[in-house]
Amino acid sequence: MKYTTVGYSDFGEVRFEDGRIILKAERDGDEAFFDLKFFFDEWEQDAYVFMPACAYNGNRFKRVMRGYPPMYRPDEVGADAEPLINYVPALNKDGSGEIEVTTGDMATPCVGIFYREAKQGILIYTEQAVKGRNLGFSLKAGELMISCPAKRKEMYRFGVSNAKGDDQGIAVIKGEQVEVRIAVVEFVCGSMAEFYKKFFDTRKSLLHNDREPNMYTDELWNVMERHFNTANWSGQYYAEASKIWQCGWVGGGMSSYPLMKHGKEQSVQRAAATVDFMTEHQAKSGFFYGFIKNGIIMDDSFGYEGMEKIHLVRKSADGLYFLFKHFTLGTPKQQWVQSAKRCADAFVKLFESYGTFGQFVDVESGELIVGSSSAGAMAIGALARAGRYFGSECYMKIAKQAGEMYYRRFISNGISMGAIGEALCAPDSESIFAFVESYVALYEETKEEKWLSYAQDCAHMASSWVVTYSYMFPEGSEFERLKINTVGSVFANVQNKHSAPGITSLSGDAVYKLWLYTGDERYLELIRDIASFMPQCVSRKERPIHAREPGNPAMPEGYINERVNMSDWEGKECIGTVFYGTCWCETSLILTFSELIWEYGLSW
Image (cartoon, rainbow, N blue to C red):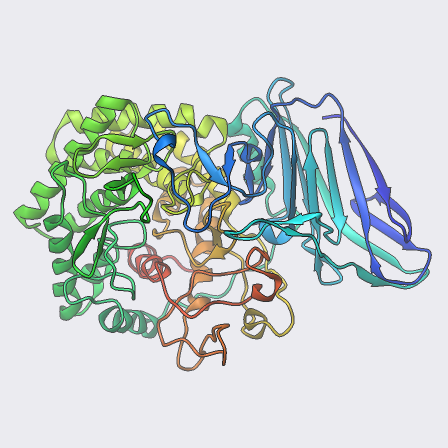
């Protein structure tokens, strides 16, 4: 890929040599910046633009300015509805516009470009910071500027209109030489699969820190089991500490699996009651009710007028997939089996009617409301398991058809999106990890090598959401005090710009299985990274995590907050801090105990 580079600074000469951007300061200053610009020749207007956990195909979707949580409106729905995202950093649909972000917005500091027509790719890696300040990236057609440090004209702010940039420079003295390491990887590239394979091969080439030691102890399991039985038991089911029932997604009908498998008698009984509750709350369509608050069945519309009764299909897909996991623990109740069949039939009917699982359906009728999404990725694996369990070719047939369609429509175009209930159709990690799970399930049920290949392609893309290095948190922040090592934390989506403890809400055991089936040690490395991060974020009596609310209260033992703020999307003062609260991450942690630490003996 042909390009030229030009360095610039008001404070002296800027050179690019020997893998470094170098400023030779010619005067003293407290607000110094230096830049390196890449000018790309023969720019393709439809070039695939990539920033790990930040931009996929440049986030070229129609953007709407909506407060949190955003939702579709009645005039924006339909089987072929145009995908929408909130006003996140993005190029325009025609490739014009500009993306301005910092290294804190990415799982690893990197910009990638893929010329589809010329079959060329490039990956440009940098360090996180210069003198403690994050670098910045500004990309538009044919031009990339790396700013040392960041100097954004406009800063992304969550749920509100964006703010005017106020990034600060660094202090330099005359004669000082300031350097930033950079690595440029150029390669021939004929497909999206090849592009992400190269990223997977090189993602730790510049920034790479050791993961944390194995902290999965019996004591930690006991802390989490007590937490679930004190904070997360509603009296009828396990949920989050809010006691709100949400099937799938954030753990409803998922956390019950490891508690049933490894918990004490009380946990086993309550886990069974949780599955009872889920299977008793099933709409006439066959989909599970996804949101129940204070005993009242609700929908996933967040109160948007005209969107009543909508249901995020990902919730039922997760619920169905995990039902079959529960079935492996003993003879299931007939009610559970009948419920699983009804839900599997609902997904078959949905796909046969529309050729997709879509994103939102009418929970009562099963009618597709919003399509154009890969939110239903887990339904592929769920139907593969249904095919084996029920001995029905019907389920396996749809699983294969859907698996092929989704790969061609989404994965081969470098996009996976829509699995987050409150992020419209934003690209996300949750759907791509669900694809890994589903394609591994298809491979296990069919032994067809194609599905294993697809699972590997998805794992390479999924790795782009996983942090590769230990982020330098601001001095005095809670995460700096705790010495949190971010290696293995996972970004959820491009709207909510924080990484988190774990995959929502999976252990990632399918990634481990890829190592078993292929022998590629890098899959083992990836899942070890993800697993190693989570225990650091558990508030413990001997190591409490303090929230940012007034008085900095310590969170109770067993609490895990989802915020691993490397980005300033909530404000600079929130980097390295958490709010007072616990969430789905607990489910990912106990699933990791069950499916990786104890099932496979994962260690490092």
